[in-house]
Length: 95
Image 1 (cartoon, rainbow, N blue to C red):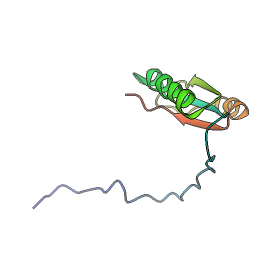
Image 2 (cartoon, one colour):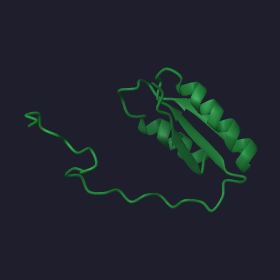
Image 3 (tube, rainbow, N blue to C red):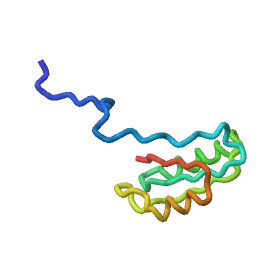
Image 4 (cartoon, helix red, strand yellow):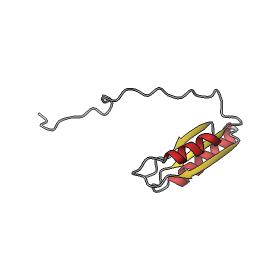
């Protein structure tokens, strides 16, 4: 018998579900913003994904910006700037 409690990470929490943003039918001609979380390899991951998005999916342009620190959320200013330039966003999870 196991005396350690088990926590099911898929069980959810008390927060209400957030509706997902509408997804485009394709990426051709779109501008994609990418937020680097400042962890190791985050920039490399995003640069690699950006190249694939441009060459394979016809993304017109990618924008990569770094947030202040991995433990802090991106600032409202950074999010607003990217929202003005891009139709989609990707966040990196380097580690």
